[in-house]
Image (cartoon, rainbow, N blue to C red):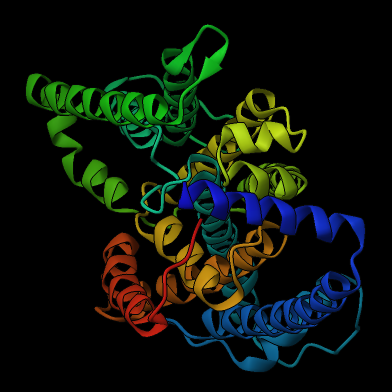
Length: 376
């Protein structure tokens, strides 16, 4: 009864905000100022992180090259070249595509995590919650197993089949969970978990049976641990197109996520077509996850911790939570990828290991320091 009354108060709060109540308008203005200030600060931090990650590395690139070359290439400035051609090549052809890709992958994972946590009303939901990790892993194994070689929009057989596997797994989980035209959140979670386990062990089964796959074990293991593998601007453009399109579409459903976080019955009472919006949001979240898999393999923890951290600081309202999570995730992964390149030179540490080591303690600190409960 108390729980129902709490949800009723939340509904009344949403309605009063929609009706333009004076108190609601004043509170909304305060929240908007904090949101815009936070977003601008995070965007500046992202720019600083990208400049740092582009400058620092095994081969040092002067800061002036990092600042002026992109502006010259874009036609914004016309600064005379006083740096060696090798520095410009390292910057624009090797390092900058990877840094931009890291920001896109981090933003996609964090945004997908925020969408799934709100949609499924589960604080443990992450981008791989409905089986995309198992589908992507099996797709990667098949890509290494096949003797064919092809390229789709600049991507080889492994990332292409991983992308297809991730989307296929998500679609299968949704179809398995849909009964009588409706989808239960609990059934969807269970279907995604079971499907991910089956597909992951299918990959292990192929690994045991096939010698060719065992020869590529190091490549497969590195991909499963995650790492930014983008090497050219064509790949960056494809990932950017997928992430920006799916991300902007997902943000358009922020009000629906707010209502659905109260439960299906309450959301329908507020006029949200729950089943249709759930299907669209699942598709958009899966697209974001699959795009991240193409660029970085299976990078864990980003989609789980970043939405929680942002929610603890800025609150659970999804019109603010989604963009702030995306920018924060981009910052986090750009810095994690930088550390993966410089910690154990000349080797690289899989970035998935760093996201766990860095993200886990930060998440626990924020969770412990908040001293309060929060809802998705």
